[in-house]
Length: 167
Image (cartoon, rainbow, N blue to C red; front, side):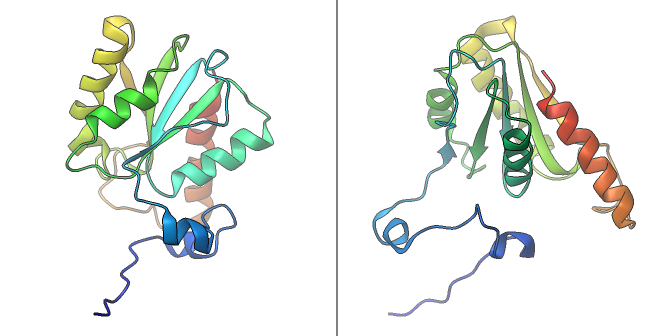
């Protein structure tokens, strides 16, 4: 039986050089609810950023450009049902972190922050105790999903990416 492919993604990711998979990955791979950051040394990491979607690639490109090895990026690919066990496993190697953030492209009152922060905070408390509190970094609350001016949108993005990656 043939089924249509439905892709719910921003257009910018359709041909993004980092958002590609090989035919081998598609044929033999599987969906991952949480994608841990295996590209950094867990002992050096001081900040963990949880994110989902397009903002991951923005953060990854900027982290690479700045040559940072003390920031880990963990992607939540599924938000409901919340992948608590997988997130705990992804966070477990990071014993020396000083802070942890949720970062999203959407304004604070939109996107996954309000609907999922209690799940994320529960996992962070289980893994790190009361020593760490999950914080938010991203756009300020807004009535509209976009500000209307591309220059303002880009400036906001630069601001919150800088805040997210500055330990």
